[in-house]
Length: 259
Ligand code: NAP
Image (cartoon, rainbow, N blue to C red; front, side):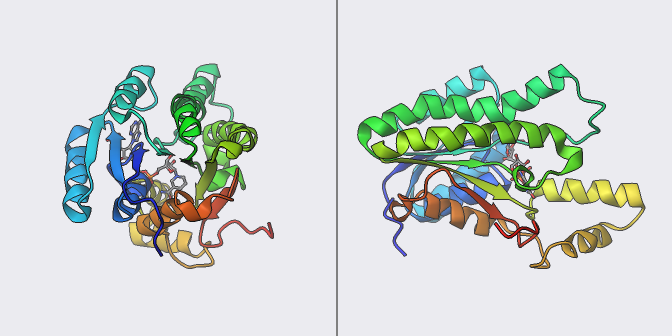
């Protein structure tokens, strides 16, 4: 399928690895020129080179912490006018509800709610002026089905979800769509770190920790960054202009719910 976005320009945040990289790669495959970001320069430059060599698109890389105002300003300066924005950043740490104080909540809300909102506010007005735009926010299945140890993530991402629900309907008439992608477990560094935690806590091998988690997923496996990226690219395509303010779960059936 021709996604109709060849030659467009996208900013993909937190994209040197994992799900962000999957989104960047699927957009590059569709002919989209990219600005990508992550904090660590080495792997970011490597990803930029890989994608431009493989797909013949331009890929500019900005090493910056997207959850800080200073980092966002540097990224926005290079990004300029973009047609597509993919919001992403690392998730907050796990813990117990009794451990988190005001500062922990402020950090989580800053990173996973207010940073994507700041980028939406910076870039969507230009998209509206030009009559076309796409925003995809990477959130989590924890928006639909809470993960108790990730209370900071559950809270901050729920806040972003509420903001998107209203805002997406305010900008849709100008040709701009905003939607959220909700990953369940995917085979990225994050999954390795979650499995290491289970392996250490239960005294089992990494392989058994993974098997145990796979048993809770009807698809019987972890998702891939390629599958995730393909869904993102479709949401960013000209074919997806009627999808507004949705929360699309990619979880192999892990959330046991009818709707
Ligand atoms: P990952 O494999 O660990 O990759 C994270 C990417 O984001 C890396 O490129 C990292 O590079 C970059 N990054 C992290 N923090 C950043 C920051 N503050 N500023 C700029 N770049 C940053 O993680 P992932 O699995 O792709 O997860 C992406 C998001 O989806 C996270 O919010 C995660 O919580 C959420 N999620 C993931 C899963 C899953 O199973 N994988 C499930 C549910 C939700 P640097 O470290 O160099 O900055």
